Length: 478
Picture 1: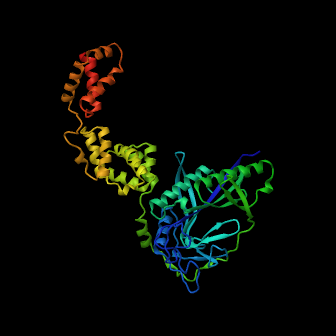
Picture 2: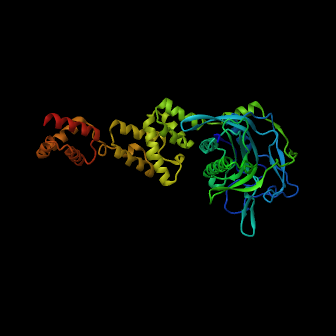
Picture 3: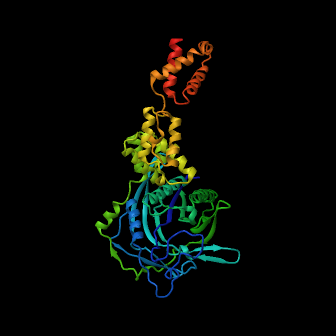
């Protein structure tokens, strides 16, 4: 049996965020209350006309540029004609002939390797209503009807679920970094159509494409791909080539399998034509340039910068760039001259731990990068111990005071060598039997002496300096 290779293409739909919907004045917001965010246009009332949301256009162009696509000369919309209960007008306003971006290319990271991903096109359209199916009825929620929907269509350039998963994570970060969408799968803001085909490894043509519609989680996409590769490969290995047909399937979350929905012999004729109620307008170079300037440095560029220029390890750099707000905080620390590794350690361990515990945003954190710098400086000077620094960290946040308010002469760490040496000599002079035990090989008694120093200084002795002096005195003096 010849070696088989899977080829996968993805159609990724993402709901963009804006105050109003893409063509109507209705509020664009997630709500569990059905049919509360609707306007006459969403319901296709006679006499209503669409008005294009400028922010949605700019956000779509922003992502088109971020994906290195070619933008059209004119912004044009088309009608996709079909009747379905979730589409009151009987057609969808979309982009067929002049999408907002074509022929894009980005690099993603998979298992520490960089691979290219090719984008066929991206386009802006309106979402349809959502249907809730019950035993004998189907309810329609029109809140989603008219929500700005951004569709990204890749070339068939993936060969495993791991590659696709890395791609989806990468794109979601781009959407969040550019602040065009929360890309929250739990709120149904991301949906994917997954196309999988199997062919002989050296075949000149792709195998029969099988499409799985509306998979609404990354886990579901991974499950769909792995199941379809296994299912199609098994059929071909058993010689049942005629059973691998062009069809539409759905992902069943309960059984972790795909289920056949319908055949897809020919493409459906949607009778596309230009939307007559939205005049086309020219996309100028100056307009594109202004949008391009609003695109922040994206996560992969930042990650390599942290590793190559600030000597962070891959793990720490990856954590820092997962969230743009965390990355921005870290970069502000760098601008203030904070040591990169110290800043990264504090952000990853203490700050992110506190944010996760309190479900807070780093933008609302009272401990600004400047205050974190003050804390790290006091620790570096030896004024405070690591334990004290962690205590002050909490006090600064909760009491909303400055670091210096908690660093006093009484609470400061003892880092004066002469002062510590005198304290240690006094302790050693009062513990001759313990010294004898240490000299006879009971080296764990060393921790006893450290404990005595901490007790004597009420925990304020510099632990590193304490151990250094103790080692010297025990090995040389006694």
